[in-house]
Image (cartoon, rainbow, N blue to C red; front, top):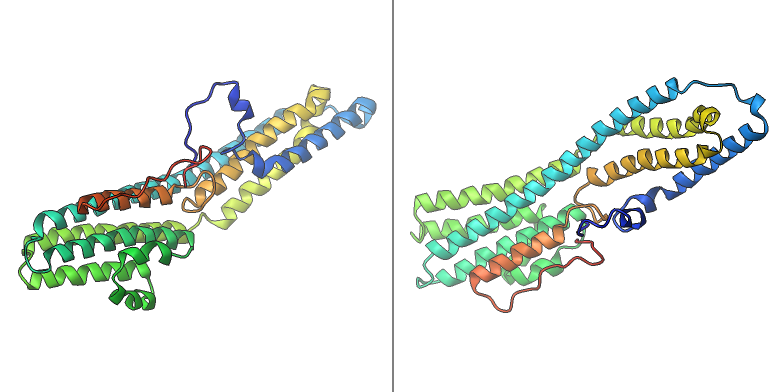
Length: 308
């Protein structure tokens, strides 16, 4: 995710990092060259170009703008839903850890070990979920927080995140059977575990249910078709300025299309995707602080205005 102060209006024209220009500049160049070719041909052979009215091009542009607007809104809704779910995970992780420290007596036999065991597993859950969503190797990040006796159990689990939640539930169940937790406290802690499972399921729903392919295909085809016919529609009125207007409109439509594609998959590693690494590190720092561990890991910092 791009993190930066609002730049001066003049600098906006020169910012490349975080924009979609690197993804679409070849298409813009092609449309600009097409516009230049059409403008040159019309300048030297005006009789070959009938005097088109701008009305059909304008109506086509309005329709395309509506399509792109709907798709952009749908993609942003997915991005924002992903961010809200990770916000819920931060709240549930802090709340469960706070209750472990507050209500499990560290002076009782195995009380302090139980606190550390559960809170470490909560940290491991956040890292495991991040790696699951990004399809990367989770073990280097979670091994420091998982007991050696549980490693094989988690490696055999079909879902690593679900396996971690089961280990937490098993340990809390043992506490209840030993009367270390009351039924009421057990119920409240289970609510936080359920919230964590709900975040996992919601993120999986977003990741595994993309926008309908036919809708995406319709928008992209229409955007390409419009930008291809645009120079022919405006050359009679714009003349040698046709390449400039063609480039601006191509940047707008192709840019919205490319941005929608990035936002549609909010858990990736593109410049505008969610900073899952930074959020999982925030959970790690907060929970280790609850345990009283020192020194704490450093927060993830933005590198060249990009937070991962």
